[in-house]
Length: 347
Image (cartoon, rainbow, N blue to C red; front, side, top):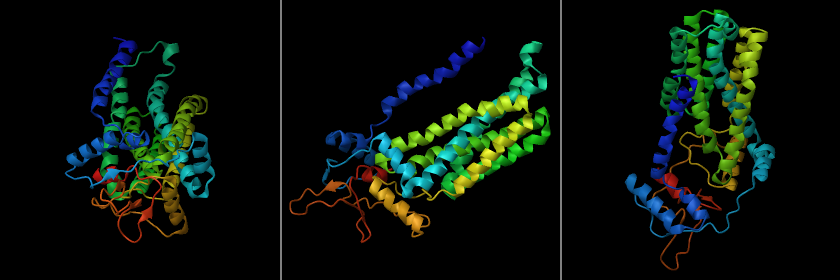
């Protein structure tokens, strides 16, 4: 059929998005910000029903005083504020290394076959069925990579999971260096390398929105994700130009160095998000980060919200007023906005 039909067939599953989007509920926080309290309540009630819970009595408090930082303000906060600086530098390193190593290994998969056959274009060579089978096997590694990440991320935590997966990627890339065109061995090693880098990419996608508070989450996530795109744009210079100009070992060494740097960055992340409640506003998030910096918190695995708490609800009865507090203990945190408190509890 040719490469054009291959692109069409590959893109066809994207049409499922138009079907699936109809069944995805809108964010209750969006409804709160836009003042659509009834719709926000409907979404929360549906989530509660699906999880066998009941919403606390009362009404949702509007977020009248919420101020959303601009993209430039978010950049200044996460890059220059001491509370967020270390986290941001580590995350940007992880995202860059994910993009660089992932796409580098994708290109390396075909480059090794290309190298074994000589210049395919000049020699008018055509890849054989065994060549395509080798590429398919290496590419299929992404499925067990996803399964591996799902199986370890909640057992050993986000930080250690990323460190192990990046470290394993570096090991297999180093093992690839002395093979020198041994096709079957190349495919086997590339299979495990791509499996591990796929797993690390998945967990970084999970960790980043968990660690930033809601009011800067989307923008901060976007900045971090951009570094994966930068890594993806630069990786051809390693996986192709450096490969052809210097040798396969040089390209593989550079990829291994990036994977090792990401391993260190994973261990240096200031906070573990596994089992920890997500922060809803910048003040709360900064409080947690400062405690981590001072050593007051080691794992920051906070207790789940009490489903009977009035976290984001105003009491309906007169005289009781309202409390802008998460939890009902002496150490409850005062919040500026509590849009996701009940939603997180119900998930």
